[in-house]
Structure formats: structure tokens, C-alpha cells
Amino acid sequence: MEDATKEKYVPHSQGVSPQHNLYQRPKGLKGLYFHPATQLVMLGLVCFMCPGLFNALNGLGAGGQVDSATSSNANTALHATFSISAFFSGSINNRLGARMTLFLGSIGYALYIASYLAMNIHPSAGGFVIAAGTILGICAGLLWTAQGSLMLSYPTESQKGRFIGIFWAILNLGAVIGASVSLALNFSGTTNSVGNSTYIAFLVLTMTGAMIPLIMANPDDIVRTDGSKPAAFRHPSWRAEIYNLWVAVRDDRLVILLFPMFFSASWFYTWQFNGYNAALFTIQARSLNNLIYWVAQIVGSIIIGIILDTKVIGRRARAFTGWGILFFAVTSLHIWAYFYQKNYTRESVSHTAHKIGISDKGYMAKMWLYFFFGILDAIWQITVYWIVGTMSNDPAKLAHFTGLYKAFQSAGATGIWRADAVKTSYMNMFVSTWVLLIAGLLFALPMIHLRVKNTTDLEEKTQ
Image (tube, rainbow, N blue to C red; front, side, top):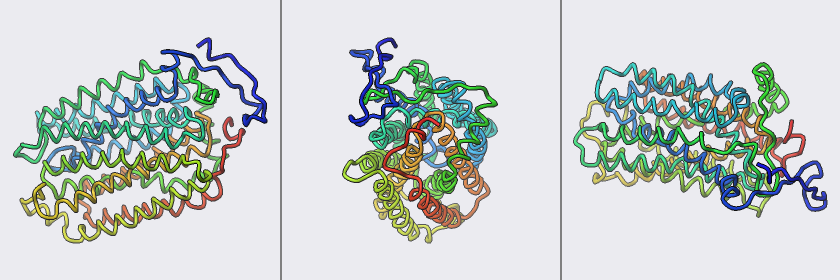
């Protein structure tokens, strides 16, 4: 990119460190294509059609099936391999490059959705679903690490909240569209599971999304809106990258205090999707709840993105504000949910043929709870990413941190999906969800106090 390499010196008095070079951004269509926001949108579209549609499918409860056992076992396998893959995927990302890592990661989502189509055609294909979940776990570790590295390195410090919020909105727009398709195709159905047409529609969209990384720009060619470039994306040896993973944690040990918050970041899905949505509602109501949940994610992502980037208060104050919002939301929503959960058990719902429908008394209140759980999910994930983004602007270091985030997140999910597969009581799943979320927040509080600064030091950007 010839016109992106012209350097000019800006005096330190103008607010830019003299150790930084500024670059002239390209003009016209080329400038639009290489704009960080354009690349963010393309990144969002990959996740819109891959994880977004996966989320829509999982949000139906049991992957749209009647029996949750196969889905829970597949998710257990998925998150077990995800946790291992994510732990090393920062090193893989830095070695292969973000675009190739993103492409390899996206392929597994199409395979996973195809496995549910296979099981709808051949009910004995549950083993294929579990195998596909295992492969997807490896792929997901690659995709989410590449995604996190790109999403956190493209924006300037003052734009990180908005960029994360925009990405999360696009990601969940995929789940919204997927849920809308599912609702339309299943609204008049008489069974309690989704049909082949739903899985086929999801499969076509997912395969399309997997191709987008091949046309994304080289990250090294991106110039931010303030004229700076992201720190160079390094491609060292495998041995050096594994060592760098250790160095990233050793030199920034306060990240360890975020591990409980990472661990609980997917724990709540199992109770929400299977212990609440799949347990209580008809397929029509499940589909509508699923749509509402992912719409709420978009609402939550916009709200928290604005809050975390507001210039009215400093970055440290915004970090504590985000923490306070999360603490209030976790506490109030789980108190609300407790009054529903105490009235049913896994055994009671299995012995009744009646499921709550859209026109039944009491449905609206339960639907609104699901809506606010969707907002909570968006706020939790975006705040975690934002806190990680305050620790560095170096894409290689961020790849390690986001890889660790996804590793611990998936380790937690492995445990709770397995608990659901072996029929752990819904109340125990619910209580464990509540306790882990509060614990994650309490551990994160001293890290925010000690580590989050109003700006990231230069040495933290490049080490």
C-alpha cells in the first residue's frame, strides 16, 4: 500500500508521542476498503454467519432438538477442545496471520450445523454431532483468537468500546436473522424440534461467511483514523510464540485476576438455553425467545459500547462503571429468575406434556426475563474484551490474552455442558451460574483498581 507508508513527524506538543509515526490514509474506494471500520464490519460478517448462526441454533435449546443429551454432549466436546485450542491459538494466530487463522476457524461452524441436518435425516447420527462439536472446538479457538486480536488492535484507545460494541451488534444480528428464520419456519409446526429447511438455510449462510476472510485486507496495511498503525503483526517461530505466551502472563500477572471472569463467561448459557428456554417452552415460544434474546444482545452492545467510550469521565471511572452495571444486572436478574426456577425441576418438566406457549398466561414476564439475560450477556462479554483491551494495544499480546480468555471461557463451558448432559438438577445449575458470575466480578475488581489506567503506556503497547 504505497500511499500508506508516507511518514510525517508530529511534535509531542500536539498530543502524539514523538516515538510514533503517522501515516497518510489512502483516498477513494481504496481508502474505504482499508478503513478500520470497514475491516471491522467484514470481521463482524464472518462472525455474523458462523458463530452468530451457531448461537441462534444453540439458543433454541438442545440445538433445536427434543432431547438435550446429544446437544449437551456435543457442546461438552466442543468446549473441551476449544479450551485447549484457545490456549495455544494466540501463538498460531501470530505465526499464520490473522486472516488465515480466521478462515481455518470459520470452517468448523459449517460442519457443526451440517451434523444437525444429518441427525434430522438419520436419528442415529448423534455420534457425528459430537465429533463435529469436537472439531468445531479446535476451529473456534482459532476464530475467536484472531477475531479478538483484530478487533482490539484496529481502533484507537478512544474507540475501543464502540468498535467492540459494533462488532458485537453485527455478530448478534446474525443470531437475530438465524432466529427469525427459525421462527418463521417453525411457527406453524406441530413437533417440538426444527425441520431440515432450518438447518439447510443455516448451512448455506455459514459456508458463505467462511469465505469472507479470504477477501479481507492484510492487517499490516491498515491505518487507523488518527493516522497511526496497529503495532506490527509478528510472525515468529513456533518456539518463540509458545515462550511469548508465558512472557505475556509473567509480565502482566494481574491478568490472572480476570481468569474467574473468563471462566464464567459461557457458564450461564447452559441454564438459560436448556434449563430455562428448552425446559419450559414450546418450539414456537423457544424460537420467539431466541429471537428476542439476540435482539437484546444488540441493544446491550450499543448501550455498553457508548458507556465504555464516553469522554465525560476517564477510562478508570468507565471501568468501574461497567463493573457496577454488571454487578447490579447479575444480582437483580438472578433474584428474578430464582422465583421461576424454584417452581420446577428437571423431573417435573419431563413428566408434563404441557409447555408454555406464546398465548399462555405468564409467558410475557418470562419472555422479558430472557430479553434482559440477552442484554446481560452482551454487557458481560464486551466489558471483558474492553478490560483486556486496556492492558495493551499490541496485537500479538492481545492475541495471547484473548486466547487465554477463550481458553478459560471454554473450560467453564465444558464443565457446565457436561453437568447438563448427566442431568444435574436445574436448581444446582442455576445457583452455580449465579455464584460464578459474582465471583468473577469480585476477583476482577482489584485488577481494575490496580491495572486500568487512563491511557496505555507506550512500552505496554509494544512489549
